[in-house]
Length: 147
Image 1: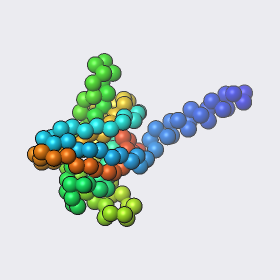
Image 2: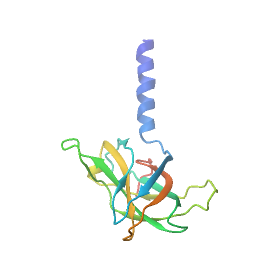
Image 3: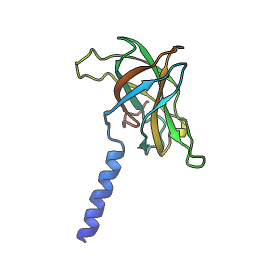
């Protein structure tokens, strides 16, 4: 009986944490000429496309107030490739340096983001021949549902 109770607690904890709103840090080097940059994947367990993902562009070495384009990609289990799992979104660098406050932008996904490994992808929002670094936070699913 104790084993059954322990299993129930673990199972319910895992279910709740799947929709936990996290602030996962990232640092990317944005490539020139619209080159895509990707980070590590996280499991997006939801099949509700309206369970929003989020991103905060805290700092950009391109300059204060600049824009980087972000989108979500989901792993296609059959091909092993990542497919676009959301629309692209131009995100402004928000955070005044050193404030420690994250200003999130929330977005919906598409079916390529259903119950799969998801990763945040980014590129420069304009044609440039230079590299620059960005820093921020994101989460593949927040539990915030778009109505």
